[in-house]
Structure formats: C-alpha cells, structure tokens
Image (cartoon, rainbow, N blue to C red; front, top):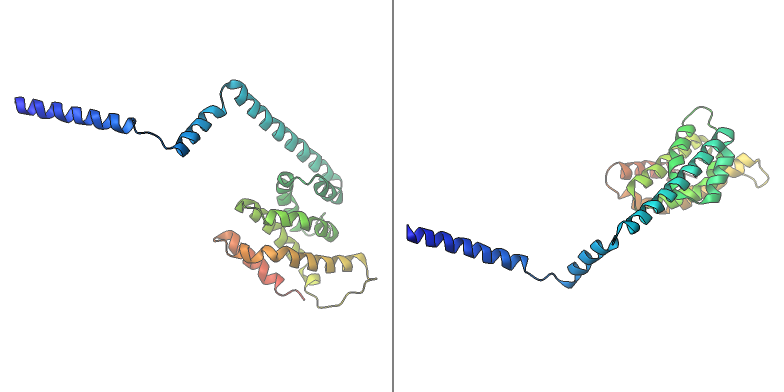
Length: 209
C-alpha cells in the first residue's frame, strides 16, 4: 500500500514537473512579437473605439454613395455609369453590378451598349481581384453583356469609321472584351463555378471575328 502511495505521489510529482516544464518553455521571438502585437494593438478602449469609429465612417460613406447611385439609376442609367467611373469605388461598383446584370437580362434594358463599353475598364479591375466572390460578380456581368449583344458582336463585318455610333461601339466592345480577357487563362483554371463560368465566356470570345 505504501508502495502504491509512493507511486501515486511520484506520478503526481512527475506530472507537476512536466506541466511546469511545458508552461515554462520560452516562446520564440517571432511568436513573442505576435503575442505582444496582438495584446498591445488595443492598449485601452480608446484605441478600440477609434477603430470602430473609422469603420463607421467607411460604412457611412459607402451607404451614402449607394444612395446616390440608386437615385441616379432611377433617373438615368448613363448618369449612374458616369458616377461609378468618376468615384472609382470598387466596393460601390460591386454592389451595383448585380443590378446592372439583372437589367441586361431584360427585354428592354436601361443600360446601353455605350454605357457597357465605358464600364468595361472598371470591371477589368474586379476580374483581377484576389477574391473569388468579386470575380464572380464581374464574370456574370460580362456574360450578360456578351449574350445581350452577341448577334452584333459575332457578325464578321468591317464597320466603317463614319458608321453610326452603335456600330462604332460594337467595334470598341470587341476590342475591349479581347483586352479584358487577358485575365481569362488564369480565371479558367479556378476550380468550381468560377472556372466554369470563365470557360463559358471564353467559348464566346474565341468566336469573335
């Protein structure tokens, strides 16, 4: 019995020593700096409050711009596009693109071909994003543009310089779509829905005259 008590005591002592050894292990300098950084980032509630205030200002500004965008959209689609190009706000553009995509899928869209031509450089920025959700928003819009004007885009006709503005826009759209698709090979390699959508768009663009 005494031996068992001694074994138990020794075992508990050993566990205590092991626990103390583990807890007392020195942290390497990289881990120490990370821990120090995490703990010192918010030294008091003042710093935390400042961060929250900054976030609130960003969200307030974003909401304000969205309200302006909504007003312009109800008034004139071209004014909305001009506004999006002027403010150069990717976040607001990402919020607006699904609305513009849905509009292009209607029988009589508010968005003209010329507006889409002007908006393409902004969408190109979105397609270069590192966020897959953003890329999907851009791809859906591009696909809707192509489908809407595919009969005109796929015509193998040489359009004259003095032709109507719609014809000139078709030629510009073709060129900008080709420029836009420099990101295509990378996007086609993305697994899942994004890659499949990119491949579907590439199938269209490969047929452009």
